Length: 240
Length: 171
Image (tube, rainbow over all chains, first blue to last red; front, side, top):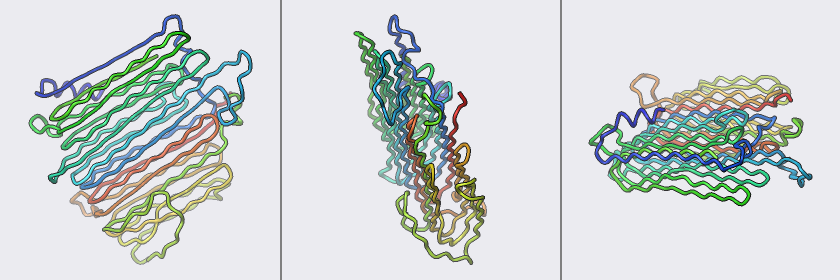
């Protein structure tokens, strides 16, 4: 929602690239519920809020791996005849690096393995202003989700990679695998002080998905790469 | 998911904080306990510890100011054991940490960090280096592993809140 507002504010700016991708796939004859994973009795919640305002050098590393299954994951016994099988995994990675210049970083990271929607929600906003000749800022963020059940397999991945100077970037990540699975990723990157002071270069953002159900298979991959002096907005959404 | 009783095999929670100001090198964020000498004359240190860690472990510490020569935080917890220590090396800093850890009933860990600097007010002092981290590892159903690190370098404000809870739903 915030990104949409930002997009409206900056509409019409020269050199702006605005891309929105929304994809919804419903495999014919297969109930949506067949892809989801039932919540486990044990519910883990994580809430991490990070705010950093720093003159030089910032580093941020983050990983998440969450797996749940209808079977016992550590013991993993063979399935009995007719036994229901569900398995789901969400992985999230994030790197941030800045140097030499001034960094303002805000990140809100939430995990709730029992929540209706979403299980993973990350909002990240970073502003970087280079104060030296070789200003550096780098960002790599990725999320992927795997869902398996008898006769079906879903894999979805989305992410972005940035390397810029003087930039205000915002990303939102939402992943849900219990109840109604879906994955949402959006990214905005633009100038830090309005038109005339653009972000500099290199940005990659994309999504890929694979859905297999019996004899049907769907593969989808979309990636956008730009080079420099731009404003960039992209929304990616997948619901199997 | 069959039985709530097996929801968790091992729970390990690790939080590490290291603040090093004024050019003092920071150690790795998950560090072994190495007791260091403190200088009480230069330290405004408040610390409180709750009951037995295995019984009802709650503890908190906070407020460190100027020329403070040791602290940090690393509590580690498993289903049977919890260890904690702290280490901090700093000068010219206005920093506050708050921590709450519980393993009885619903496991919980709350950890807040504040540091100063970058403002013109009297309390703005920080100049140096800060590092904070969190690691959560749960084996059972679900399997959850999480790692979080932060680092900064100079003249900064730093605010971080980390919270972890775990509970079992009634069938």
